[in-house]
Image (tube, rainbow, N blue to C red; front, side, top):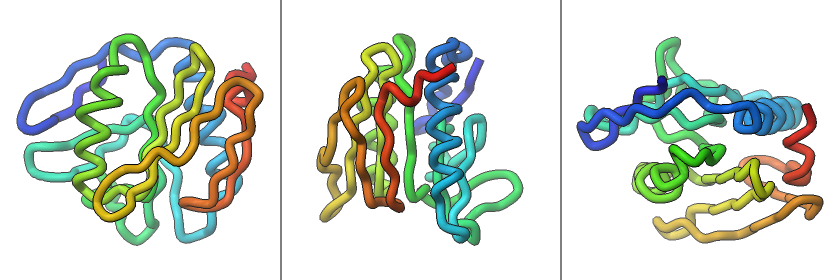
Length: 158
């Protein structure tokens, strides 16, 4: 089980399944191989302490190296990625999306491994704006938090 703290309430979700883990691992590998030296890519479980009553664990996070502690990230990540599962979809696309937006996380991505689909939001003027939705073999091409290209189908290579 994974445990997160959201506005003082404990959220407990089951362990992720095979396709969730496959997509998360492949995207983390792509991000790690492309990132600049001042950024770090980490996979859950790793705490992002947004407030005393809100400690979240995105499936993948990209953080500034200097903002990390050995125990957690006490600041918003540069990028938070959630891989959607039936048990977490609503939380990932509403509550966590909103908390990362409020904290100032510059980019938020949702990966649906069952479609497969990648949706990218970027923070502008305090709000998330959807900048990209790609399905299957369609190309994902982003510049933030750093240049990266892949397809949603690439994430399901096991």
